[in-house]
Length: 158
Image 1 (tube, rainbow, N blue to C red):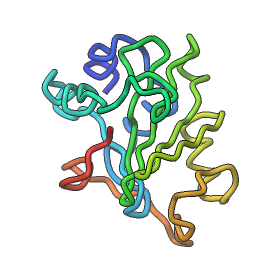
Image 2 (image 1 turned 30 degrees about the vertical axis):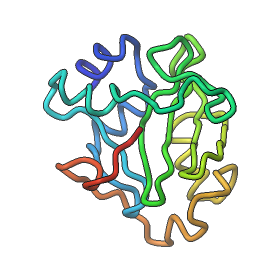
Image 3 (image 1 turned 135 degrees about the vertical axis):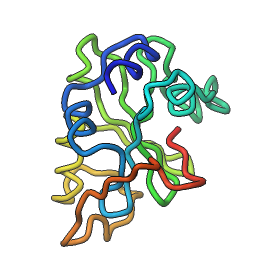
């Protein structure tokens, strides 16, 4: 993943995010939060994941942060079944210090510090997580389910 993804983006991605996806691959946490990554190593696949323009991205009232490739821009790393999108805020020089940003389908924003895995753990502990995500997620027996197809049809991260 690091090769094509980081080459396409022109920057390094957070270490724990890469390690998680290298170990588990694309899939979903409890069928709710979908994580995707380039699987075939092609430029076209990276373009599908990270190259789509953001409608209204230049409107600070609706988008308080720029989108990558602008310096310090948001980089999509996941989506969920409610239409929320999960981002890294690529503001710090060290990607392991990037903040997590979540945008709800209705345009609400949530920002928190910590790594990708810290964020997932806090969601499981129901601490410092977006107020607009499903309060029942994750379930008591939540598991990560690998998917060779990436995010579900019709749900695009970004």
